Image 1 (cartoon, one colour):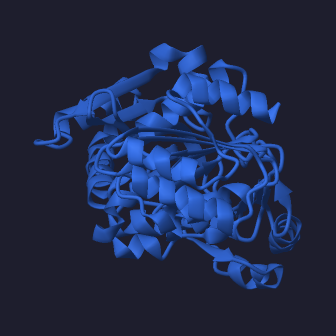
Image 2 (cartoon, helix red, strand yellow):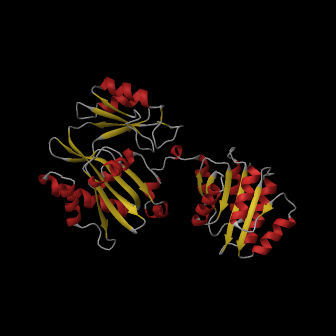
Length: 386
């Protein structure tokens, strides 16, 4: 789950991380009132969307007067902002953050991420702040420093200090930097984050540390521990089909192809999509019905898939372990009848009650193609779609 910058900063304040004062507005008419609350001569007007690269796309403006604040707020609210992370369609700006400006002495990059290869939280930092970390890693890899955090000990003071020295934090601010790092780690763990990125973390001319921008992603499996985070969810920033799928406990991600995939288990879903790509097809989605899917779940999965006009065929690839193939088969038959499915449908069932499931498909007399393995099923759906 993602949240907006202004929301991330609200959370950071609660963990004693210094951030600029600001106010979010949704209507340009509120810009002047918000600007009067800014205690600096310069204000920053920042588009609030779930995507990086806003500055390069013209989504962040420096205002030197209240008139500028009103002008930029009017320009940005309602604008379609296209960044490398939004795709060509872009995202509509529905809110802007009007924030105090500051005199910047130096910019740094600082983040905690979940390193799945090491099964540890990793602290990443660079003296090259204010730019994409991907660019830094390609052009100046020696400018990136990391610290792996022992999950039993948490981030240790010497690790925070070592990172600070490596990225040349001014000596007089090292203790303040260590405190910021320790508080960020506490925030990361307490809020079940998968990413907590400060870019840039700045040293101001009056020698203070300030988190000028913030990005936070959360593990949805941990949201039951942090119900307050759920209040930050902005459904307008999410794919409609993904929202619909979440209502039924389905994991759905929309892609750009024309072959719909219904699979149980994330690993099998990835393998299915890879196989489709290998044989020259294009998957239209990642859809995992889970290990305990019901007939109703399968029907809902089909409804979501065929609501995408780009889908020209569906491949159902199920390995029955806890899930029984006959249950899936009944769901497929019911969905095909209920939805009057008129696009090619290929099914591969393997595992518990496989024979019973295939018998149900056969007895339905519906125009459903079957396959004995994933390769055969993939080739068949691609040929039918083409």
